[in-house]
Length: 140
Length: 194
Image 1: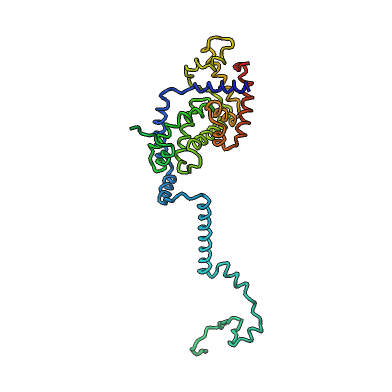
Image 2: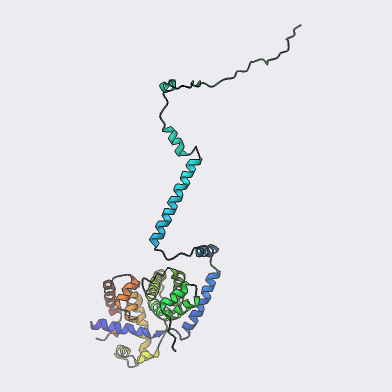
């Protein structure tokens, strides 16, 4: 315990080490100059962000609440965007998936329809090999 | 009528509201104490000056995030110790000491007389030697041990306050001190009274 005490007493002598008297007066002036320089040389994006965030002056809110409300806002906007996309675009993947999932049409069900079924084959137009004309053919 | 000095918290609130002069007042208040903390950890006046500027800049930038869960004193010391330890990790083995002058008052300090009166009666001759030896010994400790020794032995902070600043238990503070003292005992053998 004596040795411990002696070490503490020795180390306490380090309190006598001081910077020059005028050091602390100059320190504040140096700090102010440096702060101003920092403000001038700050990147544009950092200044812009500060100005943007100062628009929204909010009361102090716990970080967890801030984070969870931000997460809810993001999820809601993703859901709304996804839903509106589905509504406006018929070729969206979800729509085609629904069509594919519909019941297959059988022959029986087509026969029971009241309306006549359309022919399945497509119409073909065949052009004659010779051009059609109303003029009489002349031969000598 | 005597004007009362504003409390640290008042100055913090004014700084948050955009009053830069309030922060200047905090710089004036805290710079001597934080200078001591950083200087005794780095053993270099130049490094301490640079670090102290960085510490106050950081404090100014993040003061809006200070919620008052701890005192401003503890908050500032936490920033200072963490930044000093990070700096020392980067500085690694570059151990150039640039020591401050020793106040002449030390020559009348009984602890100094006791430590240096073993053989040579000329205390002034031993002063430089003791200062060099103390600083070299401290630099041999790990950064974490040096921080605890600086705050407890040199600055006279209580264990509980050190524990808050370093965010460790009081038991850990005590065990770090015990281990550091054992190491210092070897390095400072010649100055310890038998």
